[in-house]
Amino acid sequence: MAGYGGTDCIPQGLTLSAGRYTVVADDDTANTVGLATGLGVIVSHVVQVLRAGIPILGDGLVTTTGGTIALSDGATYVLTTGDVINWIAVGTK
Image (cartoon, rainbow, N blue to C red):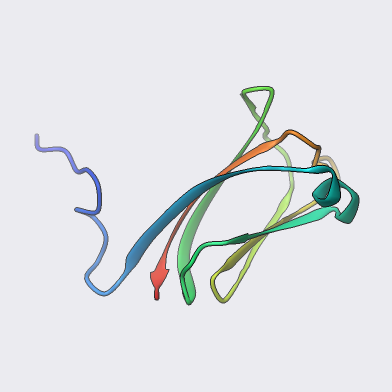
């Protein structure tokens, strides 16, 4: 079976963007972080949060507006300085 890699599985006309962000004290205080993807419109996204290298399985609120992914506190998940946010977004420029 052939595997997919890179952008082989991204539909024509869409662009893949990905990054990593480490939460800083200002984000922690604001209870939200905005991640600029460089896209104009996001049509699909994946967000993973790590704390001390361990995935956080919580209820953080993930939303998108235009080309920005926002992660905010939930009832059990609270942004904490040092959390690492890995994200992938697919959309249009």
